[in-house]
Length: 249
Image 1 (cartoon, helix red, strand yellow):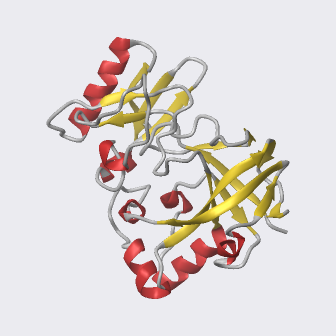
Image 2 (cartoon, one colour; image 1 turned 45 degrees about the vertical axis):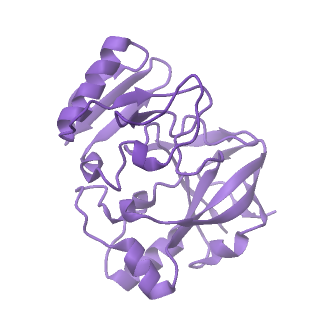
């Protein structure tokens, strides 16, 4: 039986995951609250009044700012409070809806990453700061991660791939056979679009922030591609819980 092993949401682009027990999915929408916030670089042309998708280089991100992996973040949607910790100690917290707090959070990241200019904490209703313009969810086959780890001689944390749904019960790389097919996940229905081509962000260890594995290079040299996980478009509303079955509809 193929089932959902974990559900992960990333409230702030480039920062840590939140584990969820269940989540509602809505047609043509992303996981609720996923990548809803981002720290834009000072020169980024993002306008919250007219939000448009921008390449990830315009934001703080793991591919360039690997030090972000040392931070643990929690976001409370009800209060709007973002809490940032390192090694179990709270470094800063503040409400993203209050201008003074936003400035403090921005100043924190400028100092933490030693940036020449202060980044901007940005958001816009309904906007998702994903690497892909279309609102999608991402699915990771844990068997493929284990196979890659076996070939690399390493224990690979699935969080490196920052997917929304971790699934178990497939054979390695079987998820790629789902491209172009409809998949039932919990009570929701998704259409699988294509594999996720991986970048150097996956080389950053999510526990130590070290660039310890050259995953995209190894994927290309060993398998002839740089893919891990799949993107899917929600086409019918439903709820997904950890333990729910997933498979071809």
